[in-house]
Length: 285
Ligand code: C2E
Ligand code: CA
Ligand code: CA
Ligand code: CA
Image (cartoon, rainbow, N blue to C red; front, side, top):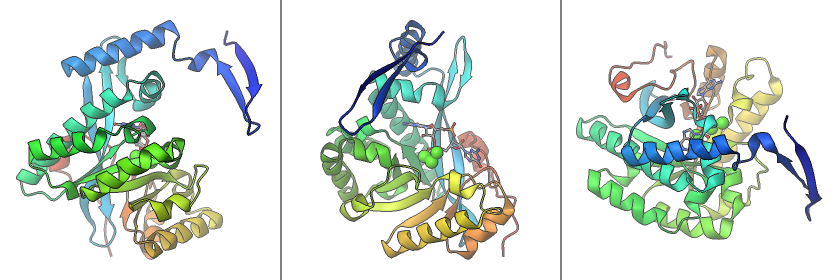
């Protein structure tokens, strides 16, 4: 049974909870991380799937989000939720991100070389953007693959940005100066402080699917989504709505001027080869 232990309340009155179920030092979790390091070293079992983003103005797919998957030798196909958080807690996330960047940039450069204009978004974590080496590493990968910086987008959540803003800010500024776009992921659900929107070179807001999925049924969520689109555009950002599952939601997003839609209605994440042949199955006005 899981032992939950209430630790001392922090200065902000928050209560830290020790929960055996999420303890990164549990033996099977450590061995999972050992397996992950081996998979990264041997480049075996890890894969990126790509989820198309629909440009609502043109009805075309002009960008994708790279999402990591892991075919574990014993445990089978693992979703990112099964190992990304653990990699963050154990400090292995930078290794994983390096692999994701190298793989995603290599794929983007294949599309680029084939004449297909496709921006690729890659998810990065708090520890990645607190790493002063990140901008140089990304620049080296772009150069090695001959990929223009404008083809790369880095997605980061508000809470990851806020963990150590003093470390993250110079890294993000350098990335932006290199021409790499920054996207705020899961916008609206974090303990968000709009202050960073003034300080950071943000190019895109991604509206969390918590607001998008219920759009058709919820007037409140329609107000929130419309307001985020307005805020984003007023700040010179583009907007992607994630988790679009219903046609009514897509139509509403198009009506309020949202730039991109991403979700199962448009397409599920897929392998790169499947994307080459993919056309959205949607009638467009
Ligand atoms: P996210 O960045 O918010 O990614 C979107 C997630 O929503 C993906 O789950 C995607 O498959 C799922 N999704 C897309 N459309 C729909 C929809 O219409 N309905 C529903 N219900 N879900 C939809 P996935 O691939 O399991 O990824 C989960 C999370 O894991 C991601 O959330 C992201 O935070 C993290 N993640 C994935 N790949 C990476 C990576 O390479 N590096 C890092 N650091 N994190 C990653
Ligand atoms: Ca994301
Ligand atoms: Ca997201
Ligand atoms: Ca999310």
